[in-house]
Length: 170
Image (cartoon, rainbow, N blue to C red; front, side, top):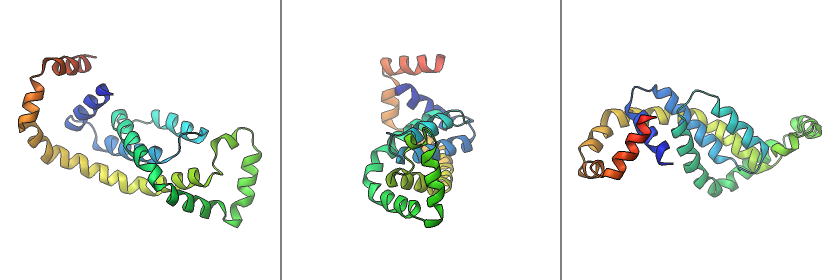
């Protein structure tokens, strides 16, 4: 985990495309909101790994969103139930359930469907928020962090400098 955090901060400060970081920010939130006990989560997780995004940001946002997701299960249940009970879609959902292994995605669970829909709705706003945060980090916050006394003290710790050196040396 420390290796991912070091790579994340180096990407925030490096000449990495802000769009890659912002997409990772959004993808992490999308997947972090979903329950993890279904095939749909694993399919989306693996699919996102093949996209060119900043993987450390993706994993950090996945963990952060996962901690807040249970609080929003009531909202996800309401949204998912409203979508799954649309009469014109009932035939499609019935057909999907008859296909082998599609039932393992648990798309017919109102919390799974609601969290997926909310994740899709939040994707674009979170992308722009991610780009804004990268801009603010690079333009304003990096200077303060580098000049802080805490950073200077931590940078002098031999163990931490060895860890950062090993991560950077790969």
